[in-house]
Length: 347
Image (cartoon, rainbow, N blue to C red; front, side, top):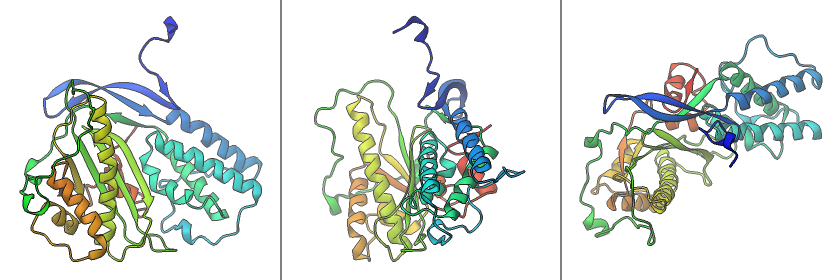
């Protein structure tokens, strides 16, 4: 290594890396070191390129005011029947979607569902879709400065919400399957949380629902997800159950990976969802599933709870950050900012 290259990290794949000293409310320690990533520098060039393209190629001058939300109220990309883009505009649209997807990857979770919905139109984009892309960039210019802090502090979990119950009569003496060749864990243990949500029949074309979730390691967000489900569900209950099963599958992989890296895990994954029926069915052994079509997700989650791999608890929809990844109706205002600030900070 070159001597002048040794030091604290500065940039990672377009994201500016910065260290912070933050407060730990549990230990009352005011000097906890945390790292954060900001895509602000990366975002500037695409915004300038889009504005230049609009001006030179389309003759559209930048608006006097930037958009305060990623989508216009009520806009539905899948229902847009405006004129199809020509070959050049189509290529430009696809390029911008690739850039926006990377911006989401760098931590701009506040546009995750909008980018996901626009990405589903790559095969046949229309003028309305391109205008929606322009609006997303206008919103990014409005709120261009952000940072995602990877807080190492332990979360303050109310354990009364996650009681350990006796599941032996239903699944026997089941235990979490551990990697057979994992090294001896060293260092401080980590805690995992999963916030999960689903809309219901949100796609106007085929009425498929959308799964959204956020995974936190201690207080640090480490994975975010927003994707349309692969089959049509005929109830909110079914859509929420599939969303929880999808999120739990990802968390299982993370637990496996952490153990293979020699990192100890403290307890089960604490899963938060805002559908009370799903929580009751996954946290109470005596609950009964009445919908046969959802039985695979039902038993997969309950067996994971029985193995103490995870536990589930209800959270208000006003506190569930996963709502950001499933509902474009949360376009602006205090609720949106409140949920986004659980994961991302503007400055």
